[in-house]
Image 1 (tube, rainbow, N blue to C red):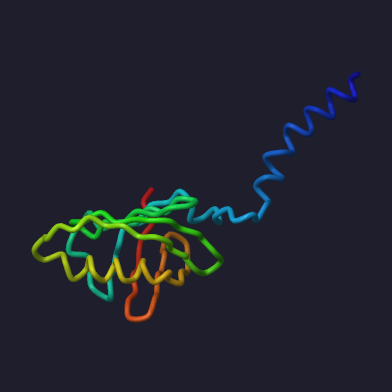
Image 2 (cartoon, rainbow, N blue to C red; image 1 turned 120 degrees about the vertical axis):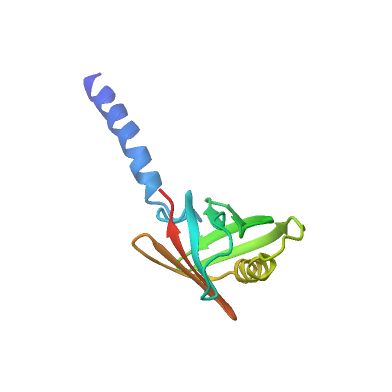
Length: 134
């Protein structure tokens, strides 16, 4: 009886550890559930202090200062694969050029690189550097 209880307790402890090791499409830990502030968009400082990107296990949301955007997301090694993409469509003076750049970048399933608290996104014609929000 004692062996059965010990085995049950061991299996209860091991299950979460084993689940964390699976690679069945789950997002890598450093990115899933993280929020990032844009530091540079195509080499320029963001026009809005609201400019941010949130990455979840299966979706993302972004704001460059006016319109909200987001969609499906799969985080693969070195690439953020974005699926159907939605955005609000409001005009905001002074922000639209960066919004278009962020939209094009995220819509192109950008390559990514994480170094400490810095996230670099690149796609043909666009790039961004972001800092992790704590």
